Image (cartoon, rainbow, N blue to C red; front, top):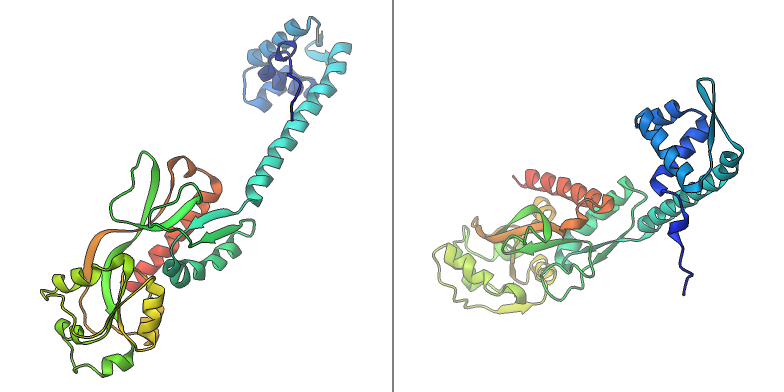
Length: 309
């Protein structure tokens, strides 16, 4: 909608209006200076600028005190109304920003097995916040267009000129299976024994099994079924059902291991490049909602690491 142009040249210096408003309300230059954390001469200068712009006196000296002139009393309600209107506008913007959900990007498994379980606790701690949790990103990279914050894996550190990054978890690979599947293996299985068991891999991480076996000095040449699925969540469901051994790359099986629903068939882990972390655009780091969420999640991640240790 087209708007008529405002002729700002007809207005007195806007910055000086704060001094005029405070001096009129308190009928004191000194008290206005104390309120605005300015000097007495600074407030006097602001009042003088407005008087020069309007061509009238806004205050009269009465002994050691000031009183508003008729012109000052006429002008004051308009200044006051303008400030109150601006404050309403600022509060409306803040309400709009608060009502808008914080958009959080992560992956299916990270959401199901870690982040989504903690989001209700975050919202309970911050009842004014709203979140949209998205797991539909096609690529692993942070989607800065459609997300404000990401809980993602990065093989190399993000560009610090563009992004703020908080590391959370190492990218360590470990194997898990059900106790029932472990019971079908030798009493104390070796790494090479896993090659004779059904293995399940995630299609975005198909080389992880190679890396894991190679780090143990064993060539990767499975003799049993080797299935590729689209998410780690599916692989872990197969492991829980006793159908295969899965390879885990994050803090997503802690409760299952603690409860005995999953076990590690061999005590071998390998560290891969990069790690899990929180990411946002650099300029968004000081956004109150972004900072609140990232700091809260980082504190929870630290507790998870301490528990695993």
